[in-house]
Length: 282
Image (cartoon, rainbow, N blue to C red; front, side):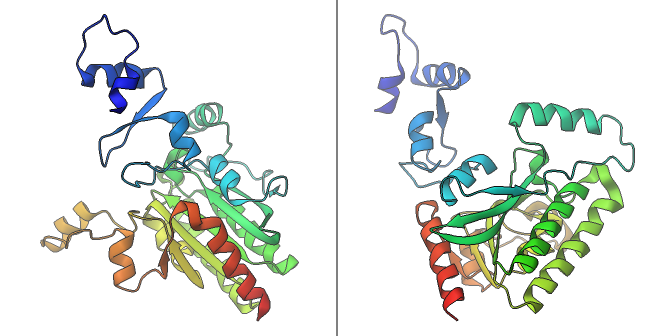
């Protein structure tokens, strides 16, 4: 068993639960929420952050996502000069942003740029749930809009990896305006005849789902991803009915026609490359 490998000192009698908890505290091990197995963190990272026992796709940082998807040395970041604003002078907001920047080593909830995927140039926007749950404020909306405008100018396809808790409440109405802005940008991209692939990861909710995330020419999703506008509990309280099993999971949405395909992480790069090739051949 994996837990037997964790135990460092056989002379100290501890339960398996206590051993697992102690080792997870020092950051070497993680516990899969789905199958409850204990996984060595390095093994998990080497397996694309997918549980080797049950296939659960752990949430992924934008940095690791870039490394998995993009050809090495081809990523050119755009929009980095666009920074977070505090239009409402929301108490403690900028301090929280600064703290997250230091902790996550990224400056906002989305990273955008031009890159190659199996040799095919494309514009990428990759959201990161580690930064204020990937919430969309001024900076996120502006960067995604700039990425799409760059694609139109360079005549390139666009791929957006979505993960978000919705609009950023600390920016009030300004954050909600990003829904209209990004939607208009996608419309211009489609009028230009350029491909837009939206990849929905866990979780994709709120204003992001209600705008650019749902507008892809092709919509892909990772397995078992939560996708929706409002959460299941809010919906149940609103309509007064029990929701179907697996409601808002990617498998349920595929069955009901909301997404086009569920793609495992190990197949994502090659799947995207094939879609880009088919688009270029037309």
